[in-house]
Image (cartoon, one colour):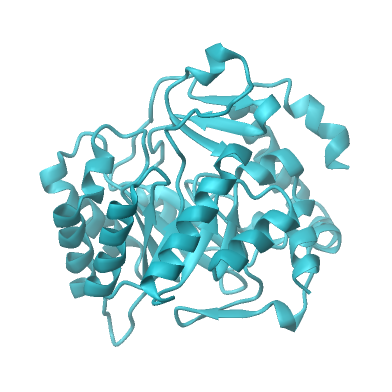
Length: 340
C-alpha cells in the first residue's frame, strides 16, 4: 500500500510530507478499529524477538531513531507500527524554531536525505508532559535524545544537558546525549574528550533518583577517525555510561548521484550512502572494545539484510529513520520476520 501513496508524498517537500503522514497516522489511530487495523498490518510479535539490553527488555530490537518525533507527539500512534522502542527528540531546554526553511532535501537516486533542521523543537518540558500522559506508555521503551540550545555557548552546554536530563528522568527509559549533529554550530566540538567527559560524568553523578538510574548512551558521528573512536571507547569505559548509538548523519558527500545542486546543500546526510560507514564504525567499536558495551546501530537500514548486517557487526539493537521514509512502515515487520 505504501508503494501506491509514496509517489504522492514525494511530490511534496519533505517537511510537508512528514506533517501529512504523521497527521494521517494520528487520524487513523483515532478512528474506530483504527489502532487494531494498524497493528494487524504492521506488527509482528514473537517472544524470540525480545532483547535485554542495558537492563531494559525490548519486545523487539527495531527502533525509531530520534528526529522523526521530536516533540513526543506521535508515540501512541507509532507503537501500532511495530517498533520495539521509540526515541523522541532531540529536545533542548528552551523551544527553538531550528534553521531557516528549506532545511530537508531528498536525494532520490541515492535513497538519501540531507537535513539541517537545527534541533527544532517545542522544548523539553512540553515533551515531558506529553510522555507523562501517553495512553500506551509502558507498552514500548521510550528514549529521550537531549541536546543544547543553539544560543548556549559550549562552555555552558553541560547545563542544558542537565536541564533536559532532569526534566525527562521520570518519563523516559533511557537517555541519549547528542553531541554529534552537524546542524548546530560548534556542537560537534563537544565530542572532544575533555568536554564530553565533563558532560557524561556530570549526568552520571545525577543519575539516581529514589534508587532508580537510567541508561545513558552517547550518539556519535560517522565522521570520527579511528583515533577518535578509540577515545570514545575510553570515555564510555571511564564514565560508565551504558553504550553508544552509531551513527548520526554524515557531512561526507562521497559517491552521490543526485542533482549536484542538492548534493551541495549543507547539513547531515542519511540513508543508503551511510550504510557501510555506519557498519564499519559499529564493527570497530565492538572489536576494539572487546564488546565491552552495547551499541545501537543506525544508518542506511533499508532492508532486513541491512539490519542483519548491523547486528552481525556488533550492534545489539537497530534504529530506522530514512529507510522508514523510503521503504514505508512495513520495513519494521519485514526485519522482525527476518530475525526469526
